[in-house]
Figure (cartoon, one colour):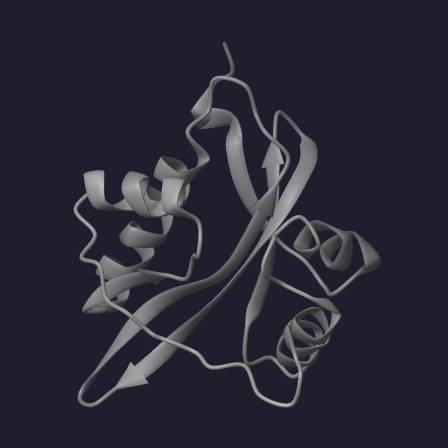
Length: 140
């Protein structure tokens, strides 16, 4: 059984490893990967490696968004190979929830299209909100 305490996050620069990780996210395409690369390169989004027991397992891209008079911690993307015995969703929610509380954020927001992830987040107290997209210009 893996130890969730051994999951850490370390600052990273954009790399082919990060681009490869993001291809694990079913609804992301190369255009999305380029958008993330640009946002990380420009410093608008932060890229962290997900590390377990000293081994890089994936990455997470996050940011803080201003909202009216407050702000939200946003998990824009997370992609990681499975770590047996570790509920990575819970580790991410706990870690970034703590960051959010420390900076006075109003919420932790996680983007997902995965039903299983939605259910996990709802069990942790997440509120379902909808953003509907209509694809334009033939982008799938």
